[in-house]
Length: 339
Image 1 (cartoon, rainbow, N blue to C red):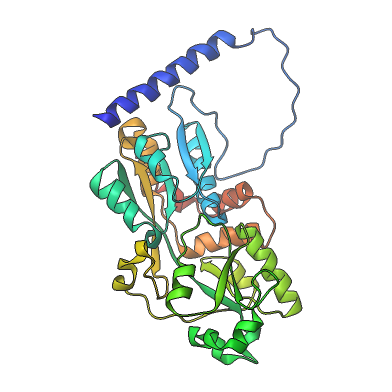
Image 2 (cartoon, one colour):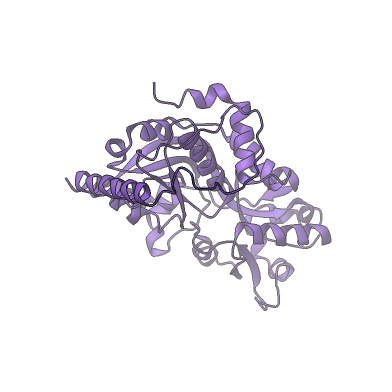
């Protein structure tokens, strides 16, 4: 019932916008603003969005793969189905309540290991969010070091090597003092590193660089000097092709280990994550064709890595990388479209 009420409210708002737009539109003989544009042959030719269709509101999380997923979806929603699209940048944890309420329609890349409680609350209990099915890529968070460190310190390939006080000093910085530095990115990301460090008895301090770009900047600086660095990272990511990195082996993941995650009981590796999508439960009725497209949206880990590399290595914009993938994979995305 609440979902139906929210659909009616959003549709009514769309009608009001249409009326206001019609009332304030320039006269037919008004001079047009000058503009320049460039066009190119594309598998996704631009079309005008249909203002009678409801606005699709997508959540974008602060990492490059999420931005690319959203760019692919936005292009298809606009250019193939005619939907207006709004994108909201929001953290992966903060997105759940607005999707449950219908303020946002969908998020396209959820890492399940960090959202067990959210799934239980919003999907299983409240039933205000729908599991939108797999995105396709399989992700894995972990601890990484540059592989060149193993030449003199092969013991650093496993977490036990980090217990040695002499090795701790390798990673010490002015900010951490006698402790070693463990570098992470955005504090809003799913991460249990402080708990893992504490529960494994390691003398390290978590330092937040602030973003994915900041981690990569520090990695590049360390690599150029062949300096020590221990940091939070994940696959799929193009940096694993650009730099020779080694994932530090932590105690094996188990469900029992993560059962105490909320109370800080994690003392093991991150699990492999089958990335999935989440939708507002009223989305299917609010915009059926958009729902079908995003429900069907599914590509491979290799596809995603290729787009990320186009941005991070080749210097393309997110939109250009997304469109290049669409141009090269027409058969794949055409299968996502409603019949």
